[in-house]
Length: 86
Image (tube, rainbow, N blue to C red; front, side, top):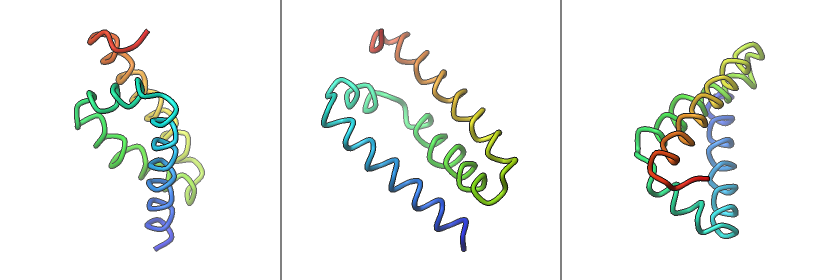
């Protein structure tokens, strides 16, 4: 039960932060919308649950950080290949 609450909280926080960022930077919205769904699903269903688990099991937090950084690097690489970043 606590895991589900943490997971829902993280997803809502992520959505609110994205909404704020997209208002400030329309370019970021375009990049995010162009990103393939499997990158988004990996964030929502792999990295976020690991973060939620990391709140309950502290050593899992290290793996969630590694997963986040790997996914972020993959997204930036995808953006650069498409000419959408830097």
